[in-house]
Amino acid sequence: MLSLGENPLTERDRGLTAALLEAIKGEVPPPFEVRRFLPLPSLSHDATGCHIGVPAEREFGAHVDQTNYSVVVNERVVVKWLTPPVPIPHPALDVLPELARAGFTHTAPPYAALLAGDRLLALVTGYLPDAVDGWTWCVDDAEAGDTAFAPVLGALAADLHLTLAALPGEPSGGRDYAGRAEDALKEALALTGGPDGAWLESAAGRLRAELAPLATAPATPLIRIHGDLHVGQILRWRDGYAVIDFDGNPTVTDADPYQPAARDVAQLATSVEHVAQVAVKRRGLPAGRAAAWAREARDLMLGAYERRLAERGRPELLDKNLIRPFEVEQECRELIYAARHLPRWRYAPMGVLRTWYPEENP
Image 1 (cartoon, rainbow, N blue to C red):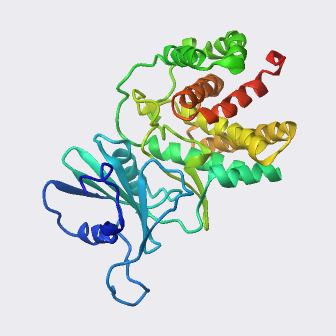
Image 2 (cartoon, rainbow, N blue to C red; image 1 turned 135 degrees about the vertical axis):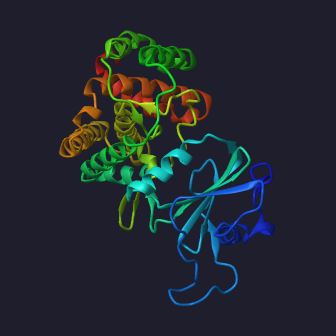
Image 3 (cartoon, rainbow, N blue to C red; image 1 turned 30 degrees about the horizontal axis):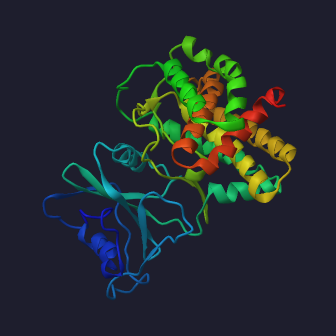
């Protein structure tokens, strides 16, 4: 188990994950440690029968884009092996027990975490039948012109933030949001070449003007946020929608986990606009229809988010004036991610920016 990542699972290791679930029900030997959040479900092969050998396990499949290695056991439990194991503290170890304690149901049930010394080896959660991630179902909705999902996602995000706002802790960093955003813009300008880079340079003044409110923003509540909230982290499954992956943003190593709620809201909103760009490129959706769909979905989502906060008596959690600046910063970070990790992704943030500032287009 300690070598996973350097030596990924092979056929020889088949059954290891199912065996782990049996092992963590009891005491585990050093150097291992199990942190339990919710009781594990029974892995019997039927509701009344006893175990017959080792419960069946399978991979998600090559079609699922994932950084780590996940195994489904008996169609009830998912074990995500961190490949390689990651050092702690780890965001999921703070967030998952709070979600379990609060009874937050819009996620895969968090069961346990397996650690060895100062490393997190695996996370154990519930399996959500018929689950499809947002880069598939949301693109389908864009193509169909369907925005019914948007109010549901807005309320879900608000419920998540209301739950996380109760999580104890203090910000460890400062509030230099303007400096962080300016650094992201400078890096995006430096890394984006060709015609896209020239266009970005021509729009830099507009982008900086959009970021300006960050320099004078009044103090706003800081809560534990998801940190990487986009439609790809929202599963549509048999019983509704679920937010997953509380590992933090893998592309921002110095981000304080305590941020304005608007940070998550902005990333979720821009991801809907990225979906529109994906639908244009991959499904042939006309650009005008895609932009109109994204605007409607975004407005419905933000409206539902605000209403839910108001219903729960916490409207102050969202500073609307921070949404647009954080959206601009997020697009810069998308360009940085494309330049450093996934060049073919550049079309999505560039498409969003060109939609925002059509007067900059030739």
